[in-house]
Length: 491
Image (cartoon, helix red, strand yellow):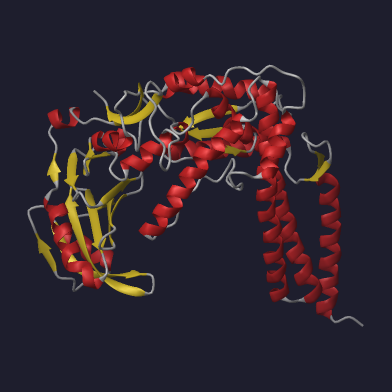
């Protein structure tokens, strides 16, 4: 005899099994790439709906790069590739995002994004087509849909385990195992997207081996970023997609890329480096000027009409969320962000609210208010200085800086100098703010990366960045008359 509990569990199990069978039957769809059945729970119409919905969030977060000619150029290349893809009936959308990140990605239903940041590191139309083709491959093979369906199946499996055993711990173990399978899809899918991207590249007349050329510069950038992140004790910002799972000489990647060349006999077009470099000549470097720029370690924000100077030995990085600054010699880190004053709130009251310390000893200065406090860094407390720089009746710049105790005396001196440098900009000063841009020039006989770095507005390790942009990392030299990418200021 079953207990009432066991009877209930048995009914639940039978119901789940019936549901699972029904979903399996309805969820099997023909993969447009392989021609085989895949377990999917999302229709093409739903896939497109998801992409349209997510697209709004992507645009809100990154913004569209304001260059209609460049947008049209990327869309033209993308549409040529999409027309030769396994899902040419889809309406594909290609967007250059206003972001300095090195990235490209795809959403369900045909939404493809590429940042101006990654475009700066590419050298030809064939290379940009290789990256776009890879992202199209994710859409045509329905990778996001297959992954979502895999995650749904994993959740369903957890219900079965819990129902038949009554054990939550076994359900959690099942979840861990199924998560590993889902993560495995990522590695498998990247290689499949490489294969498809190579095929589409071949079909529009570009040598698929252009994809192998891209891997070198992206891998060098990854090597540099990982070393820099380790030195700065932070997470590395690594491009997730094309080639990210491959070493430089990955035989699997070479195999799938070169297999595309056997699809048909073809005389490939020129890689069209001249046209591509012409199109990226003048693109914005770093953050959009409306989000503020950093020139000679001075942060200038035209919309807020303010300027703040950081010491030369600090590295300053601007992002849409906050301005970050580090001193690697002392381990100091500081952040500047925009916060709102509550009604009739004073600057000292704001600092007390943010620290949740009603007894905080706050001093007022010409620049605003500041106080010494403690912050949690990892498993230990560190001394910190927090400051409030008033912009208007509602907005305040909230500045916090910290370092290990044995270095804080020097750090605090720097933090106070940074606070004291806070100034308002006149209309004339705002009009004079220049935005760093990428420029393509012909190299002279005496040009060197050291000399170019000294003239560059890049705020940190300009020589390495210029080498990466020009595929001369870590020790390459400049050839006279070569097309050379530099970073300069708008005239």
